[in-house]
Length: 189
Image (cartoon, rainbow, N blue to C red; front, side, top):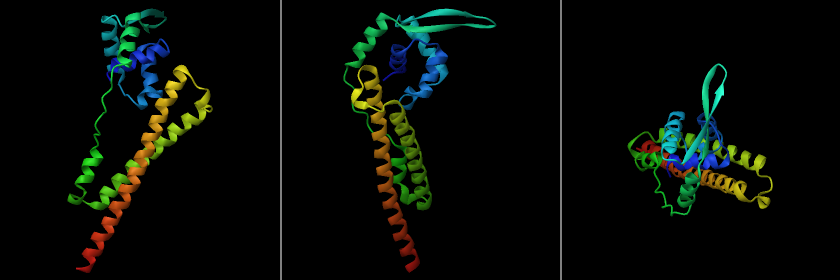
């Protein structure tokens, strides 16, 4: 997915300034696609040049004018086409996974600490996502349209965090067992 698509999706939900789109990335879209304000403004400029968005300039007293962007018909057409194109399965890329492959090369206690910290981050994110689910989607069976779509993305995040927690627990158990084994072996010598 390109940032262009994420911005167009944001604009289908509501028109906004570059700043407002950036805030939406912080509050919701950013949980599965991140971008800096600079990247957003640069992409909005390109989308406008390509005719995929339009904007209305609004005068402000004592401040520079602001541009409120709206997705164009061409942008909607492009997004509709993109939505139905196949999405290839993304290969797993994990710095932590590569580090675990080499855990025997370093301090096993430190590897365990890093893995535990990673687990804590996943648990914190799961708590955030679960709070969103509880607060914003109390009756999932009644959802439809955009709200259903947003909920389904949230459920994907919840399941990924839960899977990460499960994997971290399994890996921590294995590494702690290995640490006990190596400690016992070293003590026996």
